[in-house]
Each structure stands twice: as structure tokens, then as C-alpha cells.
Image 1 (cartoon, rainbow, N blue to C red):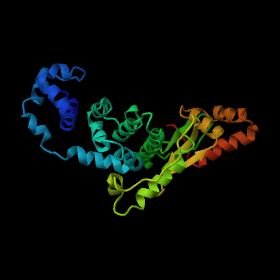
Image 2: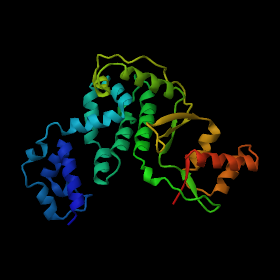
Image 3: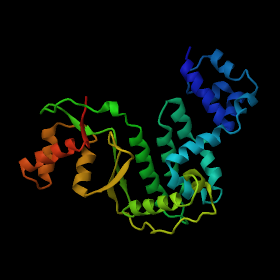
Length: 285
């Protein structure tokens, strides 16, 4: 019995009315990609359809939780035409269904949705995509477990990669300042942050037009022992190095890359050691 797959389909049916209707109309076709037996598919359509929608506020509660992690991107969407409805539509998207069925990260799926073409047009600023990228990175590092902190000594044979509590992001150069200004505006609104996000009467400050295709590296981090995540702009060389380190490498390989950027061998080794001491690079166990 594929109990886990069955349970995940139930969750999807609770959130997505159209999907639920497709399952009731033709379970085999609607669930062709889910490894369920004919009996299990029949179990899904045995209750009255209304049983799956008994909790009318389920989606709203889930959306509130997501907006608490994506307050700035969420506030921008809410102020678009039919913005709240478009946020609710997340629970009907393939990204949502795949996330639930494969037990992925709901925050990552929601961040991808916010940064998608759904919220881009010739009349809107491209800031949404870049701010969604920032908040997705923050959500990612929040989920890193301090238990992953290694106390093992590093040798020449130890592979190093980006630590799980950091995320390397690529965004437009205007993004950090714009994000900070919008978040500050929401925090000064009075009441809770989620109330400010949803309050369309609260006017958000105007910002830059995000012109051009230039990008910069930003590091989101939530180091063990820190009070909250942080965002830091990186220079191009460091950003490129950390981008390469997304694939674990030996310390000597990373030092060679630093040398190619213009450093002496001893200095290159010190750069790598410093990134390890700062817990940006981490042993891959």
C-alpha cells in the first residue's frame, strides 16, 4: 500500500478544488503519475467531495504562513489587480502539486511562483523577481539545521562546499536597497507585519526602475547562533568563487581558483581558510 503517496494526494485535494473535481471525474486519468492501486484511487473518491473542503480557511492559513516569510514580495503582489486572488492561485499550480507530492520545500515553490511570469508584464517593474529571489534565499537559510555544524578538522582531502546556512543569490544591483526600504515601510505601518502586507491602504514607497540587465552577488546567511538572517553584497570575485563552491571541491582546487583571480599562493590559502572560519565554506561529510 502506497500510504504516503495516498496521503499527499489527499492534501492536494484539500487545497485545489479543480484538481479534486478532476479526481472525482476520472481518478485514473487525474492520478496517472501517482503510484496508487485501483483500490486506493477508489478510496479517494468514496467520501463526499465536500469532505475535502470542510475547512474553508485552510488555504488562507497556509497563505498567511507563506506571506510571513515573503512579506515584501507578498505586499507587492497584494497591491496588484486581483493580487490576493493571484496569491491564492498558488495552490492550483503544478509547482504546488509537485512540492506536496514529492515532499519538497513549500517556501521554495512559493518563491518560484512569486518570481514567475505570472507577476511580470510591460507595466510592472521587474523588482518582483529579484525580491522574490532574496526572500527565497532567506527562507532557505532559515531551514538549515545547526546540527549540521561540523567540528571535524579540515585536511587536504576534505571537500569544501557552501555551508547549508548560506545561500548565494544573483539579483539586480538595486534589489538590496529596495528590499530594505519596502520592509522598513511595512514594519513601520503599525500592527503585525502580516497586517501591513495585506493592508492595501498602506502605500509602499516608490523605488528605482530596475533598468538594465546588470546583476550582483548577494549572500543570505543565518549562521548558527545568529539572531536572524542577514544579507550581504559580495564583490564579483568572491561571488564567482562561491558559485563554483556550490559543487564541493578540495581546498587545493579552491586555492588555485583564488590564485587565478590574482592572489599569491599563501594569500589564496588564507582566503579559503578565512571562508571556513567564517562558516561560509563547510566540510562536506
